[in-house]
Length: 73
Image 1 (cartoon, helix red, strand yellow):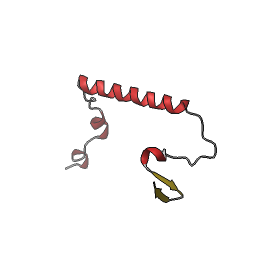
Image 2 (image 1 turned 135 degrees about the vertical axis):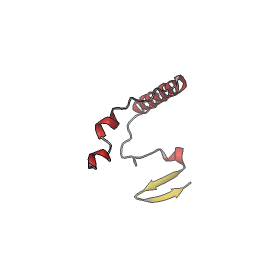
Image 3 (image 1 turned 180 degrees about the vertical axis):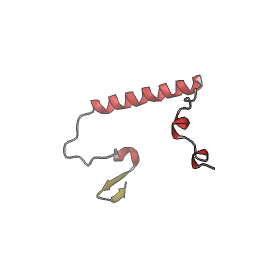
Image 4 (image 1 turned 30 degrees about the vertical axis):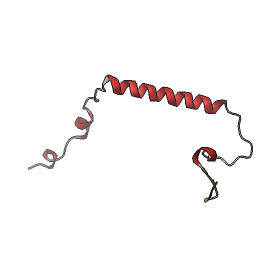
């Protein structure tokens, strides 16, 4: 037998049509995209921090991390 008979052809596997999402899934994806857009818009309106620590907001996540050392408050 020929080896080509045992291996699936990659271009044929990639030719499968994409799945159709339900209306609920499409609505959920649209809502998530809108929430991401609003969050990006809100963070872009905040004043830039000068000499800040960078990273995620420690007040929101409950700990401070500087150079790998974490202190909780």
